Length: 191
Image (cartoon, rainbow, N blue to C red; front, side, top):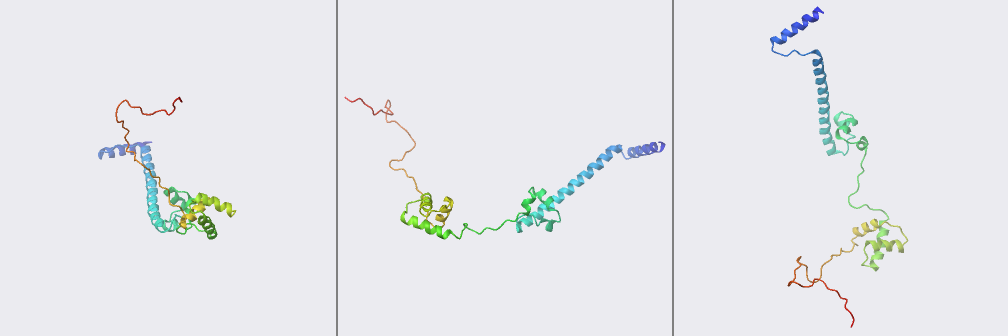
């Protein structure tokens, strides 16, 4: 007990000699624990920065982050957590689609059937052509497929433009004189 008292007094005189506050040991432990926690968070943020920088390079080259561990030396779970995405998305391999419209092998026969209908009825749009092709050739084609094929082969009708005929409306309603009737009734008694 005396040794503890001597150490306490020596610490107090040393602190007073350097004009510093005397801090209890529990506060010092809490400060050290807080420092350790902040260092851990700083390391975590540094890892996230490394992952994001490497992911930017990976995304430029290859889509996805499944190749991230080769580049960053961090596990895929940490990479996905940092990028806020599911791990399943990271492993998902996207397939490259061909440019332009999707084409089927049987499209040529469908186009011939469409041409057979449009040659006889040139004013039919894709909805009527779809109905006629399905009725005449007993097929069950989708309306969107018929529309896509007609658009690809320039068989679509030009869009109708609704034009006003006659005098254009200028947006003003004006009476020539006051006390005139705005509307009238066409019923009249027969005499």
